[in-house]
Picture: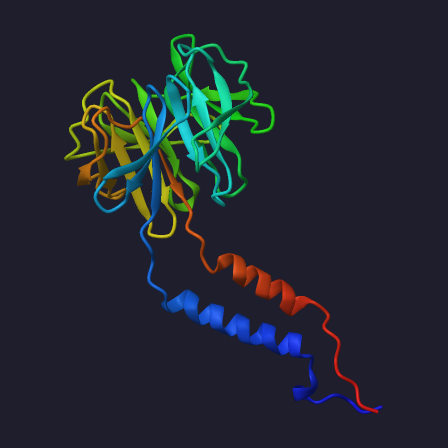
Amino acid sequence: MMTPSCNQFSAGHRATLLLLGFLLTHWFIAPARAATLVGGDFAPGVLYDINAANGAASNPRPTGLYQMAGFTVTPDGQHAYALTTFGGPQPNGLFRIDLASGAATFIGNTGLSFIGEGDLAFRPSDGRLFSVWNAVGGGMHLFTIDTTTGAATDVGAVTLAADLSGLAFGPNGALYCFENFRERLLVLDPATGSTLSTINLTGLGIGGGEMAGLAYDIVSGTMYLAGGANPSLFTIDLTTGATTLLGPTVPQGLASLAVVPEPTTVSLLILALVLLCRPWRHIRTR
């Protein structure tokens, strides 16, 4: 029996190596694509595709959820969820949303009694769903939600906060929340809900008490904010707090915003690595 030479590896193994090389090359030279944004209004609860370059809204699709407190998409872009407030006909509930049609399916009640116009955000590191706000003893609380049952678990009061709307995980896993009245971002501790630091925003003009949506695009490193009273899309410089107006969205404004990840070569890269590690058979010669 002879020892196989390098060119005697299986065709599958060689093809995998070629695929891996192509994907790695594509990964480093391909330009970043604009994010796909989906926004939702508070009432009557309609979803829209939002152009990340100019804020233009298209493809309206009703969810049937009046007073939609928050909307978000899982980090892999496969599932979407919405939360209702205490004042809606289906109060304090978690719903699964069909991104294509907007149809809502009830998952379960959170067990909370006073959810206001906050927001939802998935933590990319572990897929845990966070939300604000639930009123407890005059304070606005951060909480997590079980996406299987809808049951909520209180995290704690968001300190130094007057009103909250907009929640997103940003760079390095930091949790950002938009505080309406003071037009600033709060950086929250996901373990306690307390405010770690604040970022004052400039050039926004949304107005005190109004709702807004917040979403972070991990590919481009861009934080987006969609306003309610000022119904427009903005980007936020997380270092300086400066905002840049991109353009108007819908007349009634948006209360929630989410990034839908674009299909990239990441999935194929993972597949190639799995195949590369597979114990392919060598061709043997007698």
